[in-house]
Image (cartoon, rainbow, N blue to C red; front, side):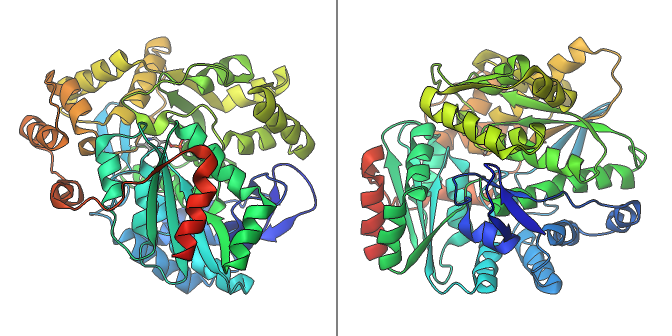
Length: 494
Ligand SMILES: *Cc1c(COP(=O)(O)O)cnc(C)c1O
């Protein structure tokens, strides 16, 4: 299997290279040359597999040059770091399920991929014969940073540096990152929002000068952001796995189409669902859920991507994004894999912050994708309503998705298609906001929030979050977007 760039050109690389390199040389994203299919026989075989086995099976279709047995044991090691089933499906109502992706070490769905990425990357370097040390740069809206730090801490021959928006992440997320242990890690706050962080990191990636300066110091840049195919591929797995679980449990018959509703920021999670569909998973619709930063809702409704708008800080900070990088991969598919067209649009986005797609493309997207969003009040109401009606507690990001799912059923009362709402974070990661939604109580301190939320819901508190209270803060640095690369150089020279 080879990978090509969303922006055209002749570059054509194996998965290992795509993962190590992160971005294509012309600034595009790597996409598989074609989508491997899962046959009926393979599907039946996967029914009795464990999550790790399903992961190895799906991944190997893209990463054939990786040794299968080794890949499988890497998947087993990664998913053994989760508490119990890595991706359990909870039925909360007739036809409504929640796919919980927050049982990993950092309590957010990013763990689904970032527990495995260090192996994919290290093995990738080996397969490509790369001898340089690797520097991972991450821009985070909160959850990727911590998950990447946990995944890569103390990894041989790798350094990892995380940039997060100074006032754009929750207290808990900030504490998780700034208390990170490990000999090879660094965490720096950036004055600005997530888009500023992401643009800063992308600029470093696209700069030949930066690459040269790092090369002279023995380092090769790579990324753990969801633009890396190594992040995307493991996310395809849980869409298959949840479907297989529904079939195994007799909730649906094999072949029945279902819907997923996904809380979306950078468009990585929902794109993985689309890739699963392209591989043959019976998916009807994908509901793209946003918060007040609803640029994607408007894009899906109007066929125009317009980032010229106010940026809001919300209670679902991991979705506070105006430039959704992975949408580029959808544009590539929808345009008939027209790299030239994708390039033009990405150039327009960079220059004018806006681009349009054709009515035909929009219609093709709307065959599968529907969009919606929740304002801050609606998130609170939705989390509250679901808690009261079913006893289920969800976090604020999942609350956005649930609101969009509820709206869908309001508009389509006769729809009997099963809806799987993807849950991306443990409620204790946003304890004050969830406590407020569930009980109306407003507390100022995160740990008090955890305590009260536990009293109200009796839900188990993850040890990794509880333990943060007593951990020393190691990282306090703050920089500006123009000084990010300076910070990088100081770190690699340490
Ligand atoms: C990252 C994240 C999202 C958004 O996922 P994308 O792949 O960026 O669309 C949603 N919710 C939570 C809790 C996250 O950490």
